[in-house]
Length: 123
Image 1 (spheres, rainbow, N blue to C red):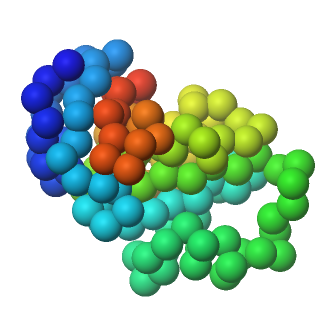
Image 2: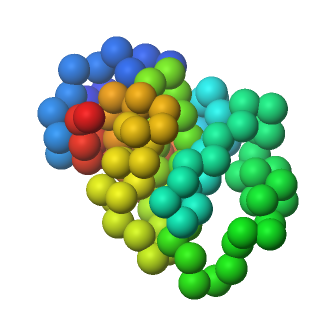
């Protein structure tokens, strides 16, 4: 694993799939914006700074059986939060991110406040 890096420097790293890196900062505040994957669509609103804000704005389409996931965007990469993946796969999320927002790489967080992230796809 590489030494800890600043969150904003993650998109500049030349990492292979499976490589892990420790971030120096929490994703809650040191990222561009959150996204929510709901039933095949990425909902990303730069004005809504939290997942809760996005979910509240879209509550009419949410139920317990639909595919849903959450994560964050930094520049042109996405970091998926592992404890918010329901009824979908990483590749379904990755495909939607690439198609809708031209994301170049997908990482998954280990779920810690200051996480270790693993590169899971290059798009």
